[in-house]
Amino acid sequence: MTNPASPAPIIRSLDALREMTRSWKAKGETIGVVPTMGALHDGHLSLARAARSATDRVIVTIFINPKQFNNPDDLKNYPRTEHEDARKLAPIGVDAIYVPDGAQMYPDGFSTKVSLDALTDVLCGAHRPGHFDGVATVVAKLLLQTSADQAFFGEKDYQQLLIVRRMALDLDICTTIVGCPTVREIDGLALSSRNLLLSDRARTTAPALSEVMEAITEGLAAGETMHNLVPLVLERLERAGFGEVDYLELRAASDLSLLDTPTEPARLFGAAWLAGVRLIDNVPV
Ligand code: AMP
Image (cartoon, rainbow, N blue to C red):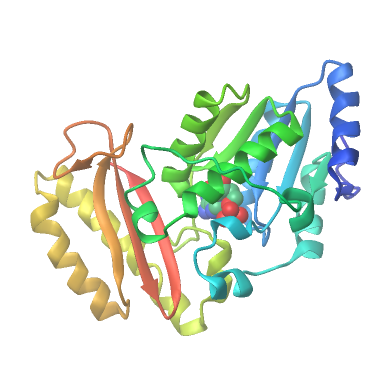
């Protein structure tokens, strides 16, 4: 483990990464990886800490993956804070920060796509065409590049977590996929790099999403149905200042099949637009 006081080395080439991981593996050390797109917040840091306590070596990857953006403006505006990210990781004592560039990840002639038949056509998959193909492709590459024994993903992106787990299983990638709980602000807003894009006013409104999701969860616990609850909370979101609601759905935690009441372990999923920023959240029911 790197001395917690000193910043981790930033590795930009796959050759340098492989040299490092080979030397660790030769000593029998285990490797944990935390894939991110940077603009790190406490949610990302919680994954790095989980990795730190689970494996001998920890690699945090930072790559803003163009293949998972279906909107060019979203890619252009995505926050980039590499220097600050490295500073935030220093106290955790990660062993390396892997920051490949686009040419490193997708060299000329790159033509493979990892695409799943199931899990990808609902929720964010239905609203962001191609998004999860981009995610599955880059995560497959990152797991193979880092030779990770374990990889840490947030439940904040629960659909992504299920997709990555399925992909690793289907492709015989020997990495255990570990899900970690969502970290929230004190007012309930799930931490997200995109929160940096919210104006002060929108930031005040943003917790309404987690509030209505909590209200639905309580309603379901009291025996109500999604059919009855959703119209009420949609009105509340609109009054709070939200724009389009992409979805507000109850789905099975195992395979994302649609439910009206929690007849099996379930999660409530929400995605809505606020002042040009798309916020997503989900909670167990
Ligand atoms: P991103 O940089 O947004 O691609 O996220 C990288 C990883 O951090 C993913 O596994 C996310 O699910 C996870 N993550 C993002 N926000 C949170 C949060 N609020 N709590 C826990 N994990 C998170």
